[in-house]
Image 1: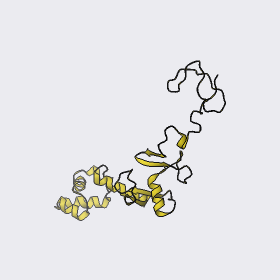
Image 2: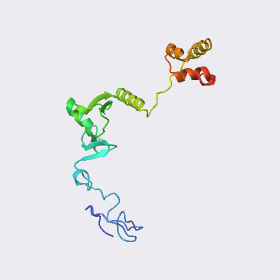
Image 3: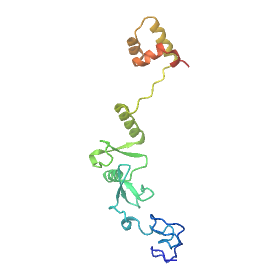
Length: 185
């Protein structure tokens, strides 16, 4: 038996297997009591401390454990902190801080915009449509419109004329006219 290296004074268990990761040898006492290896190593005392900042999914997070919006490990996104300092108040969880140029770690004040959840979602959905990474959902035509389009087409109206009259695309008009099962319910 040996004493825990964290300084608690407890005796460590005998290792059941050799582990290079934990630095233990089978049959020899371990270095720490289970869970004690990180004791007292939060914040500046932690071996991986990098000035209280880290990256989380491309965003910069700042260590502020007392902040109302702090996550489980005490970090708050820097862009939210900057917007709070600009506004002079804490942000509501329903308020979103948008990066105008879409660069997640560009936290300059002129690159940040405060939005509601619906505004933020709408903005990003529009961007996805424009970039071609997401296609807009097809608008459902009313059954009366489908039958009217078919009637007018078979009376001699062109596809282009139908598109203008019903505010639909050429592909939609062709599907309605030529593929009866696609728009019938």
